Length: 257
Image 1 (cartoon, one colour):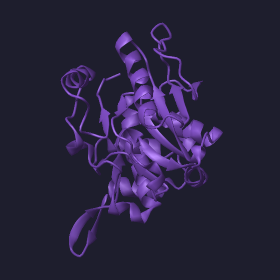
Image 2 (cartoon, rainbow, N blue to C red; image 1 turned 90 degrees about the horizontal axis):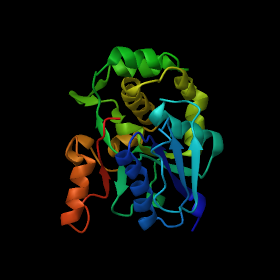
Image 3 (cartoon, rainbow, N blue to C red; image 1 turned 120 degrees about the vertical axis):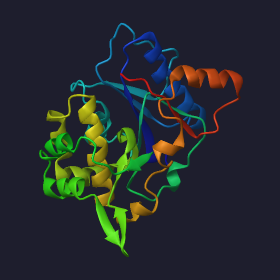
Image 4 (tube, one colour; image 1 turned 90 degrees about the vertical axis):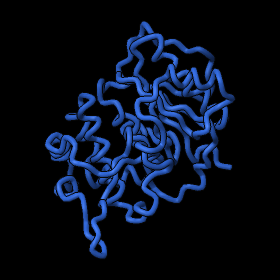
């Protein structure tokens, strides 16, 4: 077994005692099912007064980002720069594993953990961000013309990558950086609205460069039907108090940071 075949990258933002619990639980949940895998925590502008480890963690690397507010883009940048492992599972600190997923069996070079249907939400801002990319015409065209006709029926050309969370191969990411200059986005993605646009840009790039990805769309399905939208950390903890675990392989909680 190749321990370096894949590992986990967590985006962390701590601004309270409660949000400090997220990344600690996230790591513990990963360790329950993947005791030997390397974990990298990318900190995005946390309040250091609240950051505290609840345990002594082994094989966990912490990186303080020099690009505050870039959020979900940061794991891709640091993964590309450092190649911690061959493939990365990229998640938010507010995502908790409750089942083991066999990432070794994934045949795609990149796949969203969850997807959502293509839409035209905040298209103007997404177009503005996409304009800094190389080959931006292809991305912008799909933002505007998001459907194609197949046998007379309209079909989405792409799906959004919810939370910009994915399983991605390092060589594929490097190829996308060479093609699109992805990290030009570090200069323009500065707030939550921009990061929502990033979900669509990355989705387009994933689907445009892997035509067979249409067959599956994501690892865990459409986020709109996967779980209750807006599910809070308090609701999650309450559920665990009354149950042995979660029926879902991964639980995402909403926090509005």
